[in-house]
Amino acid sequence: MLNEIFHNVSGPFTIIEIANFINAKVYNLKDKKLSIYGAADVDNAVKGEITFININSTMKKLKNSSASACIVNKYDKINIPKEMVCLEVDNAHVSFAIIAQKFYPQAKFETKVSNYSNIPKKYMNSFPIRVDPFVHIEEGAIIEKNVWIGSNSFIGKGVRIGENTRISSNVSIECAEIGKNVLIYSGVKIGQSGFGFAPSQNGHIKIPQVGIVKIGDNVEIGSNTCIDRGSHGPTSIGDGTFIDNLVHIAHNVSIGKHCAIAGQVGIAGSAVIEDYCMFGGQVGIGGHITIGRGSQAGGQSGITRSILAGSKVSGTPAIPLSQYHRQALKLQQLIRAKGK
Image (tube, rainbow, N blue to C red; front, side):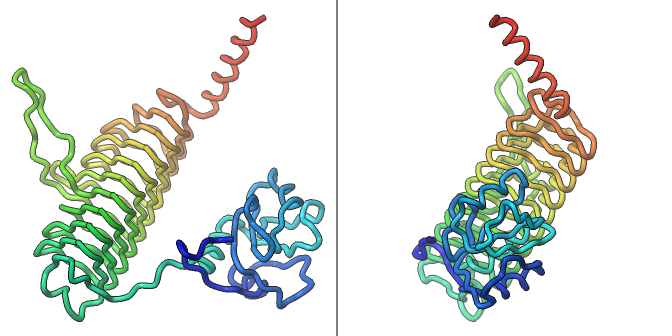
């Protein structure tokens, strides 16, 4: 069961309430008053909880699950136990996410400003924000309502933080405009100087980085990610983009809407990432290239040149996924032949 010391827990909800939340078709229902107390993945769900299956090949896992209910894309009477209530929906993964948010809501926002913080006077009294201990906000920063800033964080002069944004502890933000409903995890650094210099015989000559960072609405930025400000224009992150931990985004990078970027990805300066792109862990993207809309890159891919919209690539240097698979198969065949 979930540790309530660490996480907020809501509920229980009846199975009928849950079905209504996600507009599900219900199977194997014997008790309309059945209460569900939590949501978990199929490998960890216990009696009284609801789980989900999104991939047909894993449907058989339900036979060994103790969960009281499951969410699936299509009812399967062979692999779903008769004693397990089944909720059929169009997208099981999305529906599970909606239900999980019901059971495990974010901490409730409460207006409170710590006396151990150092912030402009206009935010000290009767302004709906939360500022935890040892926060420093410089004069000229604009903090909109319902913003929550965690302990030991720094907000530089002129920075704008949009409504309902949550900033965790030990975050540093300067030279930036942050949108609404943004979630910034611990240790993130936004708006620091980019890696700009001119090499010479006398050493590297620093080029002043005088741009900004622009982050849209509903963006999520994982722990210890660094987003450099532009050298002159902006480094920009589009609405709804999710960024994992330990990602580096260099100066003047442009990332579109609803992209998903996994941990340890590095994006070099002035690269353009169009909308709906997805990158696996440790992908490297060269500077001054364009990644077309909806493209996907497998983990550890090295993308050194522009790719067209809808591309799926893998390997270093990155090549089309189908070609990568053929090469891997051919190499395996050659190795086996050598072994004989």
